[in-house]
Length: 172
Image (cartoon, rainbow, N blue to C red):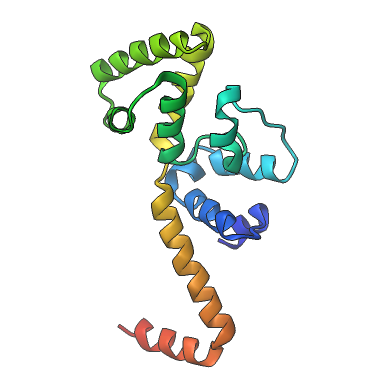
């Protein structure tokens, strides 16, 4: 945890959300956390995979980290509904090959109709498939960040009381 804080250097609540999302197994094992940290600290350059995704991927330095980003990207590039995008994430996680091939054809066709080249659409779809394996819910990360923020505030504002309660409940 301390090494992650040292690498991300959070200074606002959104940074705390990002930090908690990066603490999950997927982003750490896939190297996504390291890429985000390098891009945030200026060690690596980043460009979004498509200009229309700039606003969606801005907070994670051009990388897909949250389910909500995948859903937004699919809606913006290929006019997928929220339900279809959620079904796509479930299909990736369950490794449903036939359903994934249907999503692939539909995504490439609809993205092409909206002005994205076929090779670019294929690459973005591959990125989305890879990201869906490791993505986390931003709502869950936000809830964890809120608890951490509140715990840190309690510890800083009322250290004796906080430690007394922490010790009491640690016994159970």
